[in-house]
Amino acid sequence: MSAHVVVVGSTNLDLVVTTPQLPRPGETVLGENFRTVPGGKGANQAVAAARAGAACDFVGAVGDDAFGTQLRASLVGAGVDVRGLRTVPGASGVALIAVDRDAENFIVVAPGANGALTELDAADRSAIAAADVLLLQLEVPLSTVVRAAGWARAEGTTVVLNAAPAAVLPAELLELVDVLVVNEHEAAVVAGVFSADPPVLLDALLELVPRVVLTLGARGAAYGDRRGLRLTVPAPRIDAVDTTAAGDAFTGALAVGWAERGGAVTEDTVTASLRWACAAGAACAQRPGASTALPERAAIDALHDATYRGTP
Image 1 (cartoon, rainbow, N blue to C red):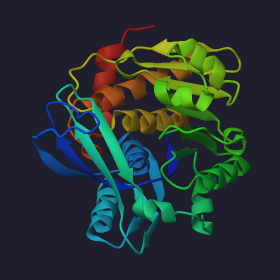
Image 2: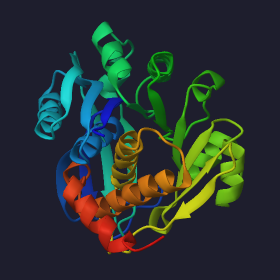
Image 3: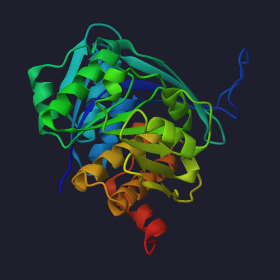
């Protein structure tokens, strides 16, 4: 089935510098290359979902500056429906990103216009009601995330929350989440535990939400739910160039894969969705940039088939 995904989230212009090594506190290092790339977790995941084959609507905000014009055009060019994208006075969101030669990165975000996304109008609510999946992150006001999740729950739309940046989440949001997607650091913060052991993290998170996808970087992803299903999927082996948006590629593709399987939660469907999402994340990491590196469906399929075909 064709997937319909709505993303309520952030859009930023990424200002990216490559450098031999990431600076320590108080240290200045000489960078190498500089580029500007449309990004933001919300916009990245919307582009990822659209390129993975979904009909995708984006609800967000940009400023009335040149960055805002660039960000809107980038979403339109990726095939994302931007009728829910507001233009507000002031600066658009900006992310300052440094990437080292090992493809590791650090990111500092100035939210700008993203902070103005404080209401959902009738058109936004209608789009959420018609969608298979509502995809959320934490780079817009938390009250808006809660409001969107509540509307999705009332309308029977699956709520997928990527809890990034890491934060302790209120109970009113957690009780609305169908699938929580987190990396190991985010998992520890959300669960309030000090452990790097995936089974421990899954057990703690499942006290809060019914289903958890734990991303493990080059090790793949793990899944757990309250029915007792646990599984781990390895990632494709690649030479990573830039991991900046790999998590967004994974999450966007996961939302598409989940929707295309009708939300069915069996070992086979979850395994298939996770493998496809891992292939998307790995395909993204093979290219530099954020939204510019997000893979098309054909690239995801090719890496997926090369890695998992013939695997039980």
